[in-house]
Amino acid sequence: MEILRIKALGHDFGGLRALSGFDLALDEREFVGVIGPNGSGKTTLFNLVSGIYRAATGSISFRGRELVGMSPSSIAHLGITRTFQNIRLFKELTVLDNVRVAKYAAVRYSGLEALLHVGRFRTEERRLTEEAMELLTLFGLDDKAEDPAKNLPYGLQRRLEMARALAASPNVLLLDEPGAGMNPAEIGRLIQLLQWTKEHFPIAIVLIEHHMKMVMELCQRIKVLDFGVTISEGTPMQIRQDPKVIEVYLGKKDYAAVAGRTENTGYGHTADNRPHG
Amino acid sequence: MMKIFRTAIHGQPAGPRRPMLAVIIAGFALSIALPYFGLLNKYVIFVLISVGINVILTISLNLVNGFMGEFSVGHAGFMAVGAYGAAVTSVNVIPRWMGAAAFPTAILAGGLAAALVSLFVAIPSFKTRGDYLAIVTLAFAMIVKSALENMDVLGGPRGFMGMQQFTTLPWVFFWMVLSLWAIRNFVYSAYGRGVLSIREDETASELSGVDTRKVKVLTFALSSFFAGVAGGLYAHLLQFINPSMFDVIKSTEMLIMVYLGGVGSIAGSILGASIYTILMEVLRPMGVWRMVLMPAVLILLMIFRPRGIMGLRELRWFVYKAIPHSGAAAKGQNIGNT
Image (cartoon, rainbow over all chains, first blue to last red; front, side, top):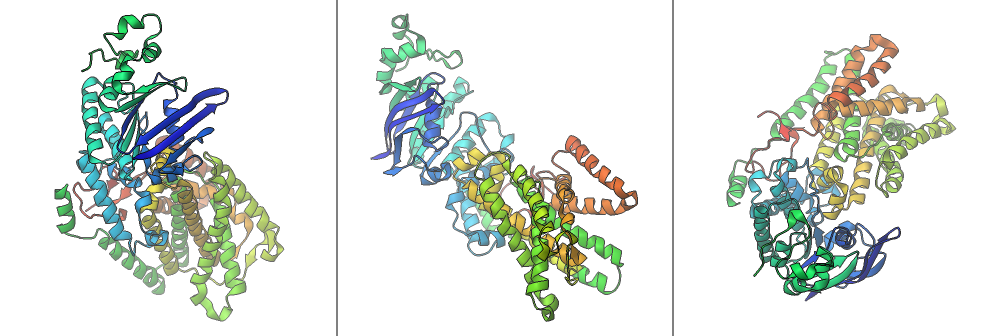
């Protein structure tokens, strides 16, 4: 069943067209990848969907509700959450509180009850905390619950950011380069984590990533952006063989020479030259 | 996971707040007994009352500046609104025969007036991101002061009087505990976590589903309420108020107490207000030179201890845990005894 429909989405910064005519129909529990060179509009897409920017043209509808013009917190509340390319945790807060913040909309007590710590407050806080601890346990972070988030190693910070994004029980999760700055071994673990996440939570995932290995292994469908325009879409197999994609990533002249033996991304630090399959 | 919950649920529910309750009761008893038996002279009582009022002001400003990470520099404006609100209520509204019984009503009126006025500042300045609050609050404090100076009904620059001296040590102790308790409760709730997350990363907070505008306005109103309460107590201590009491120097004093004691800390607010108030009394012989010392202290503080003595740390007594004794005991962030 379709959960998110993006139609003819476009946005520009001054005279620069960052994204134009973007379409996407996302089904429930689907895993879609968005790839493209730096500056191709991938993060802009996420910023539009999550409400940081207000789309200049087009529409985003989530279960029939128009999201353009809504505040980011209402969009999160409706069921779309995200992570960031450069981790944005609440550094001075504990790991537990990072997750509990995301349960803001789930509390069922009034401001007065919060001020006096009476009524539903105690039972609600206990419920929230137990739920948060459960989530942290799933992500293997329970023993670090009382540590400030800034003390976590990089890999765990990434994981905590995902736990936080899942804390509000979203239906759609937007992951912005979760593999940035990770080595191949860490990427392998991240792929497992994402596969596991997808099985455990009833969510659809949109993944922006430069690591081709991740995108190819995880995504059912891939969209390729270049200068804000969708230049290709299809299954990983189709994308891998699309001359237009290869041209964007590798340049025009010699794509024929390399196309056959590699899906090199063109990014030295993320290149993965082993053939797939 | 289950292990943690077992210890949490079946572990001893010994409340870390019990010793706190004992301290509060003992403190309240002392605040009645000491003046009653004449164990303290009038001057010491006055200083203690000032400490109490300053603790309320400090925790109130700390909520906005320390916990939420916004920057209000005109809190004296809200204190002024509270002072005048409470004073007018007790002189012109409440019949005189009701005496001290109506005192809480006057203080509440002052607090509510300040909270109401704060909405006029908060709603427009939180519409945008950035540092507008500092500019708006600074302007607001000036507007309040010159408005009061030009309102003849309120005595204009000569000031307003006629209040009875209702502010006694037990009353101040009561309002101080109430302010600390309410703000501590607020901080350890979903709203409070929203407040802290705004300080850490407003965008991430918004994207995690926190209604940041609502949280900011609510927090600012709560903060102003207690600044107003402190103003009301102040008015009923001196029995005379005039606009120049609530000038930039007053706002600066509050900032110093917050940044001395420690940003984002309840214990730090108590510490900062106490140290500063007593230090200023001890240095009274210095006269106007105290006003030179004050900014110097602030500068040194910013250089050597930018977050203050207790910056972002909390005494364990004040920490609320939804699940008592859950797994790893509070560490790192929390210090304290037990």
